[in-house]
Image 1: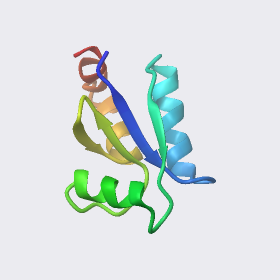
Image 2: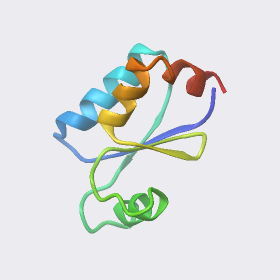
Image 3: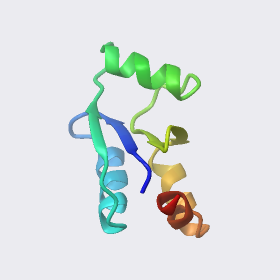
Image 4: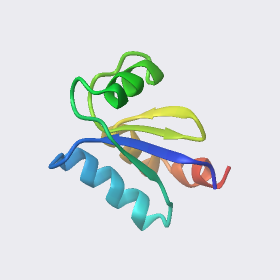
Length: 85
């Protein structure tokens, strides 16, 4: 399974939704606390091509996007392939 990183902030319902989906899939992930203005948030923005929202999810170093994009991959049947790579 590829490395999964998810940049989050506390009390974020989108972050929780993304983490819950990954957990249901049996995927382990590294959660990175990225409050506004932090070095981690700046890294997430840079790595994602300028996206400023959270969560920002990376699978195998590839920017996936946020919770909505992760859910769209699941609905399209493409998430399992990414997680199995």
